[in-house]
Image (spheres, helix red, strand yellow):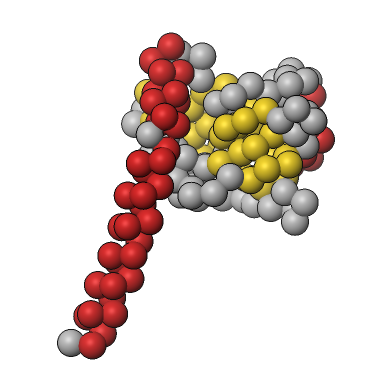
Length: 158
């Protein structure tokens, strides 16, 4: 099968039509914010229509107010009905995501040729463990970033 690379904005009307008809849309993810769960331009995600209310650990595809399309994980459902989202490879959360910004939610994904359902108990356990260790990951990722910048400065001065 031949694949064609197109911008998500071009595909959006067709995606919405398909999702509204209870269908699903499969596409290759782009970006590093969901690593290691979803790898940039390697893994594929299956998106279905979003329920009326998302749950913690769901992965919605949404549109920021700036018009940017993002696929991140729900880390909190706020009392006012908005969501706090964060990429698995991100330092900071994005609060205030409204239901009307949600296009769909990941039902499952293909990693290394294997389909992983987001309802799989092992995957759900992985999500809980991944977020349990967020404070430690935050420190490690920040330290690694600082070390990388320090090494670049050292190499420039040599």
